[in-house]
Amino acid sequence: MYFHQTVGGHATMPLYQASKDRKDEGLKIVDVLGLESTMKGVEILDLKVMIEEMESIDVPSVFICPISLEPMQDPVTLCTGQTYDRSNILKWFSLGHKTCPTTMQELWDDSVTPNKTLTHLILTWFSHKYLAMKKKLEDVQGRVLDLLDMLKKVKGQARVKALKDLRQLVAANVFARRTVSENGGLALVCSLLGPFTSHAVGSEAIGIIVNLDLVSELKRNLMHPAKVSLLVDIMNEGTIETKMNCAKLIEMLLIEGSGNGNETEIVSSLSLLVGLLRLVRDKKHPTGVLTGLILLKAICSSHESVRSSVISIGAVPQLIELLPSLNKECLEVALYILEVLSTLPEGRMALKECPNIIPNVVKLLMRVSERCTQFALSILWAIYKLAPEECASKAVEAGLAAKLLLVIQSGCNPVLKQMSSEFLKMCSVNYSTSILISKCMLSTIQ
Image (cartoon, rainbow, N blue to C red; front, side, top):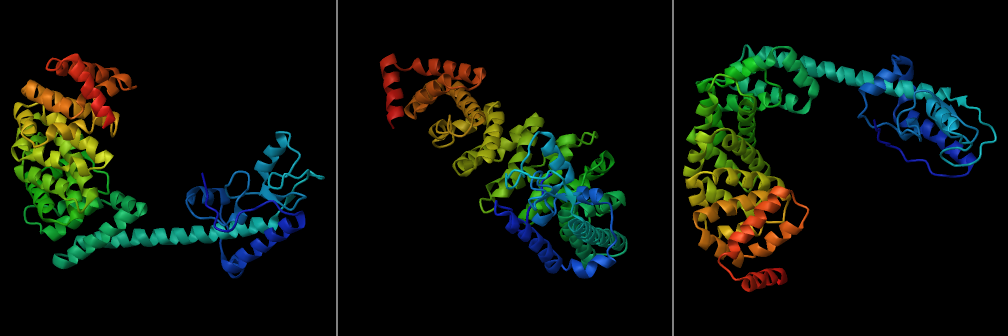
């Protein structure tokens, strides 16, 4: 557990100065945080419980033990004027130390004195913050319950407004998510999706659902053809945030499955696949690119029957065109998809027909990551099987031989090394040893 220090740290200094500064800092906290006027009216609660439940809150450094960097529960002061949590300083002494941990000065007296003033300040400060947090939590829960009750009664723009407010609460607050889940809110929101649901209502409802954990029954409910059709329509026409939420929800439904056999029907939708490619090609919103690629990967890897459809709508040349602009994470997913599509004859043909496909893929070998190298090599291998001589010639000219030698000599996995070795042998069929070596040397110099 780590607590941030919001007031200055403690440096080594003369003893009278260290003691004076520590007292001044304590007085400053009373003044600045207004504790002096609130101490009498604040209910003092269990300090240990409060610290555990508020572990991410910023705590004034005067409350932090210099040894553990955690709030002190039983502060005691040494003869040097430095204060520590009792358990931590006693452990320091038990290790045989005879010095003050902060100043490293020899202790002329190893007794510890309870710092009652600081103890009271810590208890009061945490009680004040804890009660404020609890009040805020009650307010959030109350607001969520009001919105859920409102959704049962209102329609039109009033429903859209209530859903929007609930979406914002759920996205920002874990207590709001818990309240929705524990009070039947998720089933209520899911019930609002149907064939006659407006896109405005659907977009807000989907934004709520993707932030919550779906149980199997609700997944089956959302897999209903009418709801899926609405989901796909909204993804194609909504804002970038809505498109991403729709893609995430579809992924949630596909990963665990509903068990009713509708998954293949959903992913076979050309409208869905086209919408995904639009999301992937949207360079103005890089976060959407990854979301779209992840769903496309899930579809291609789990549903073999859909791969032909993905190829037929032009996914291969579009993904190849995107490769130079993708970051590492997106690049690995895109190459994985292309590798999967290359297992089909039409996929290999689509790869072969892409302009500059071979030199562009060769550039990716040993450049980004081992996974990218493996996917890129598999793609080149697929093209080679389709047109051996043409592929070997273009690949060697693009520097493939040197890259393959680099893979073989590297610490890559044995499978990748074996693949590189076999590919190098295939390439050497069309070249004499001296020419192949010269190509390697030229590629290295370049």
